[in-house]
Amino acid sequence: MFSFGFGRDQEVGKILKIFPGRTSVPALEKNSQPKTVRITSRGVYFRSPLDGRELFIGPKESMKIQASLGADIIFAFDECTSPLVSREYAAASLARTHAWAKLSLQYYSPKQALFGIVQGSHFRDLRTRSAKFIARLPFDGFGIGGDLGRTKQDMKNILRWTLPHLSPAKPRHLLGIGYLEDIPNIIREGIDTFDCTVPTHYARRSIAFTSQGELRLDKTTYLQDHSSLDPQCVCTVCSRYTRAYLAHLLRAKESTAGTLLTIHNLFFFNHFVEQIRNDIKSGKV
View 1: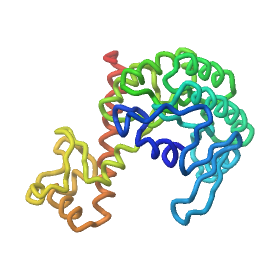
View 2 (view 1 turned 90 degrees about the vertical axis):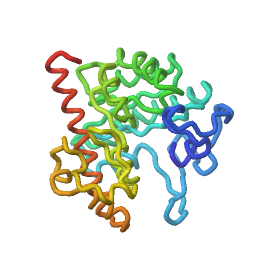
View 3 (view 1 turned 30 degrees about the vertical axis):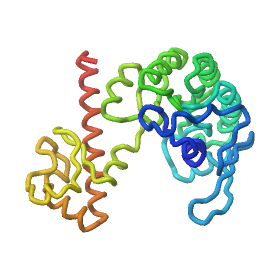
View 4 (view 1 turned 120 degrees about the horizontal axis):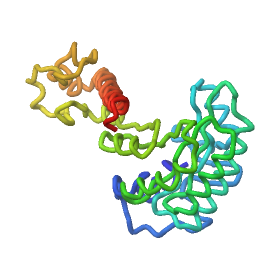
């Protein structure tokens, strides 16, 4: 809904400062519609990127798809708003999201853990209203979703408005945030789990995360570098392959390169979070 809709139209991401785009775009009015997506009270109509067919997804369809995937944790159907949203549009969107949350509870499989999603954009009263509403419903956990404002400080504010209303006895998940520099900060704010495409997305762009910083392995200099990807890493990629070999695969446009970099990046991120867990146990965080 967001990626094909206002995200594409306005060239923005979840936090405006990260993906600046065209910040002069007017705020969305209550009944605004994206160019290629039609949002209704029932759900969303959009065009298939494969063959152009009109498709529809609503709470019932979303729950069916997530059940078919067999995920352990699934999320209620909701609308992710743009960071350039007006308060009027955010309030109308929030009403839809709350109605969809109740329908998602009706349609989901009890074999899966269903998380409700708090919306409200960067408006404090809407975030508070949404957190209290979602907290009253029998969800297994909570997601903090939607746009997270225009700056990292806005994101921190949103978490501080929201988390006090969500029981710490249930997992509290931040949707779509997970850059390395963000992870310690959101954990300190009270976030238990989070998700992000960075490890896989960056791998597809030839970027490896290492203890020495990010490496762009498509540079020619790495074709003669026979050291391991990260000397301090113990993943299978670092123990078996050199930077030169990985750079060669990228030059040859071998899909194996993306696979190996993905394996390493996921290991690196998991190890990073494991270290934070240890710091929590020892009282450092």
